[in-house]
Length: 408
Image 1 (tube, helix red, strand yellow):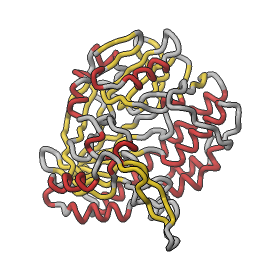
Image 2 (cartoon, helix red, strand yellow):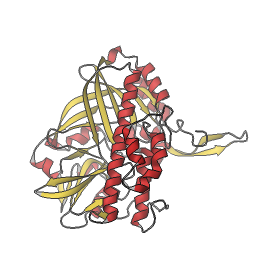
Image 3 (tube, one colour):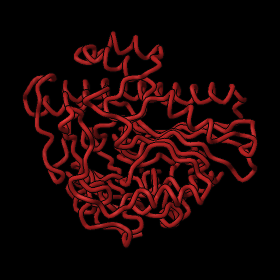
Image 4 (tube, helix red, strand yellow):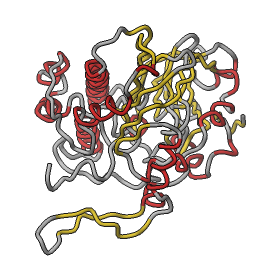
């Protein structure tokens, strides 16, 4: 662990210079405290895997576009070996909607929708239809619905995603407000290395952002609950014997070192003493259930740990560039413009050899695109302990073939 000024860095040798420069830019005063976890990588205005504590500000850049993205895992009372994983994964991929902008093929209802309809921050009310259509859907990228087997042979369900289009539209609206425009105006997001967008918590826009963020957080939790509920239905509603639900991409009012702060964790799992967390690995490696531990290092870390293995290869480098092109027959097809470094057929063969059922995904989510979770966790030291190791048996993710914006 290295420390520079008010920044504590775990696993410095695993982290590129770009996220380190980003977290340094996020420090705006001598009162700010920052942490960079070992899975840290480049993000928009704020590194993924970085946490910052502000005395009187709240960071839109630290919360990001996928407000309250998080992980939810439940242990069932059925043995994984007695589960027809191929059949279950087929049903998961058929019945749960994956992909960018995807509406739910099986619409669901939840009390959070009424809260959106009557949102305290009035501009969010116009997002009601979007929120209703996408509740219970899973995004793209590293968002997933997985089945796992633990050391005792029991089957777990694990999901990872956030507030979908509702959170994204909320964020872009506040970016516009930060530039003196209206919530519904379109504003440029800015460069990856732009200074973080910070709101004074005593300002009207700061208070409105807190209200809007909290509602998006409730929406994200509801979505994960609905997806897990649907998987349980597919499994004929087994009993639940353990569950963990946590989130990142959020800002919390907390006390550290005897002072009150607004702590933003972008791609960081809160890990206060005895607090449980579900941390996903790559599609081929074991995920873990962890518990926060009280110690001096954990205090310096703002009781924060990793949220995953941490990306080391960009999506473009791994998967190449693709574009929808209309052929002479009038049909649009996804065509490869530039080949990436990852052969996805080889990835699928590897998954098959490991007896992991893969549905969807693409080369940009290959295990080679990430660090190893065990190595990353090693650098977090004694701030956490592992309670359960979860071996993947089924993985479902959005892939480029899942969502065609010209057809769906």
